[in-house]
Structure formats: C-alpha cells, structure tokens
Image 1 (cartoon, rainbow, N blue to C red):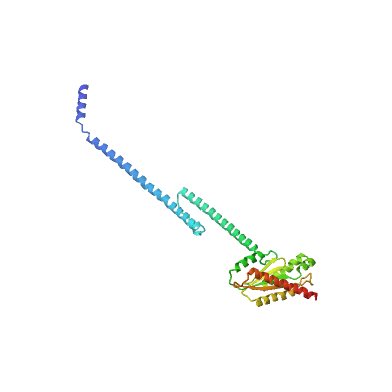
Image 2 (cartoon, one colour):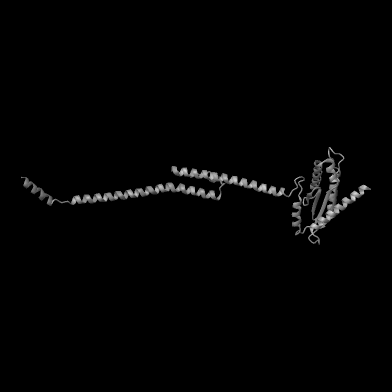
Length: 284
C-alpha cells in the first residue's frame, strides 16, 4: 500500500499547476518595491520639510548679520529676532546677537576713545600756541602767522609793546605782582582789539599785535584807548602801582619792499625809541 501511495503522490505533484504561487511571488515583489519607493518619497518630503524649517530662520539670521555689517547701530536690528522652533538655531541666534552687542559696545568704546584722543590732540596743539600765563598767543604762533602772511593780500599793521619799568615792578613788588601786571595788560589787549586782530606775548614783558586791513592811525587810536584804560587800573594791596606801556608801529603789505620780519623789527625799534624818550622826559 505504501508503494502505491507514494506513486500516487508523485503523479499528483507532476500534474499540479504552480501558476498561482508564481503570481503571489510577483505580487509580493511589486508590493515590496512600492513600499521602498513610498519610504524614499516620504523621506524626501520629510527632508524638504526639515530643510525649509532650518533654512528659513538661517536665511533670516544671515540677513540680520548683513544689516549689522552695514549699520551696526540700527535699533531695528537689535530688536529683529528670527522666529524658529529649532533649539540649536535659536541658540545660534542668541550667540550671534550677543556677539553683535559686544562688537557694538567695542565700537562705541573705540569711538569715544578716539574722540577723546582727537580732542586731546587738538587741545594740545592749541595749547602749544598759547602763552600759559596770559593765554595770549605765543612767539611760536607769531612765527607761523608771519610765514602765512607772506602770501597774504592783507594790509598788516604791526604794533610792538613793552611794559614800562617792568623790571622795577618785579624787583619792588615781587614776581607774583609782576604776573598780575602781565595778565592785566593781556586782558586789556584781548578786549581792546578787534576780533580779526591777533595779540601775542612773545616773551617777558614784550607783546605784539597784528592789525588786519587797518591803517596805522586807526591802530594807534586802539592802542591809545588801551593805554588810557591801563591808567585807571588799581591793585588792591598796591594802590601806588601804575601800569603803562611803550609801543611802536610799522605797516606791511604784499607789495612792500621789506619783509614782514623787517616790519616787526622796525616796530620794535620805534617802541624802544618811545621808551627812551619817556626816560629822558622823566629826568627833566
């Protein structure tokens, strides 16, 4: 019986149709391919979504950085934060904003430092041209003015002044009182001349005034008014002390045959002549 059964089974297997099995096998392969394709498509779309989610805030941050480069003190940039739900991008934005704040603070500090330095330099340059005691211009600035005036079309009247008996004032009352006398004359010169004129203390008790576009007669009247004001000056602790000056004039223009240095010497010589005449008159 067993032999017959085995023979029957073999014959059945030989005539059995395997078409349905092959069909199911093909369907399984198609299904697997579709599943893989769907997974790839889903991954791609998910990647695009994540990319958009990341790229948009990064683009905004880059825009803020560019605006900061062009205008670091724009208040709109300071308050312009990019909205994002990505933690790492939010942290990056906070770091960049902190860095911008530090850069902005450093720029302000450098600006203030440079501005203070510039002001110090300007003040030093200006102070270097002033006499520290009287705050009139000094000899250095006079030399600069003389150099500049060589090419000027202005008509210049040079006045050279010297305080009378200044050595005796220093010897009798002391140098502190002598300084008071120098300051008093300087103030009278500063307030007595015109805005376009320049007064200098060139050393000791010697002063120079440059009158621009003025005739000697007019300059002489200005100095005479200053001389008259000096006569009325009184010093509280030294009521007997009086101040007077001797002065000389010369005139210079671009068409002059002599140089402005020679005009200055000419005014100086005239001043000494006046001083000598005063001494001669005091002996009479």
